[in-house]
Image 1 (cartoon, rainbow, N blue to C red):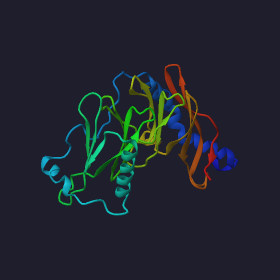
Image 2 (image 1 turned 135 degrees about the vertical axis):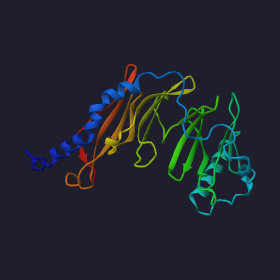
Image 3 (image 1 turned 120 degrees about the vertical axis):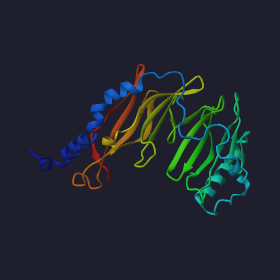
Image 4 (image 1 turned 45 degrees about the vertical axis):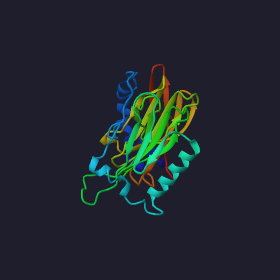
Length: 274
């Protein structure tokens, strides 16, 4: 029997299985490799400004001469939002033109220098670091780094300045012990699911699923925590428009803790997105 002769409901289910088949086949190996307890050393953010000065001294001397953000621009909106947060929280965090300065309990302060595009030197990238607030347990600074390609969310330990790239909005479990992030991107940004465990004031990555190039039609969205050990997600897959009008099918997925590791699995039938 051909796919076109199947009833509509069965065509949707078959399309989802076909779209997700690389993920379904590979999830066992991926889960085993990525969910085993990781070393105590936290995962550090890559490609983000290190501690200390980021820009060259000759550029740094011109820090106070750069023009203000254009009125009504996204940059001005981020600047005003940061100012409001700093005023409300009354923390010893300060903004000095393009520099964001954050003290930590142990070690040197964390310093992040934003960069404006240089019309002469195109090699200088644009990045705008803005303080977003504190984590729910107040143990981490939350900073958003905006570039021309997108944005990255950083959690920075107030204890020692360790940085963690969170990739998207963070959803703590009911007991506060685990953090889940889902992010969908068709560009250079991270796309997938990450689960962190909060252990002795540090974050340890316990689960990570990132689609391979063959799985780029798959994405996830966080829905809710069912309990402290189970998160409910919506998973999406792209299919032929002849199967679903908008070319997208969706179903429910669960990320659940099983003793010392986490498993991501489908938990419902497929449906066409309206």
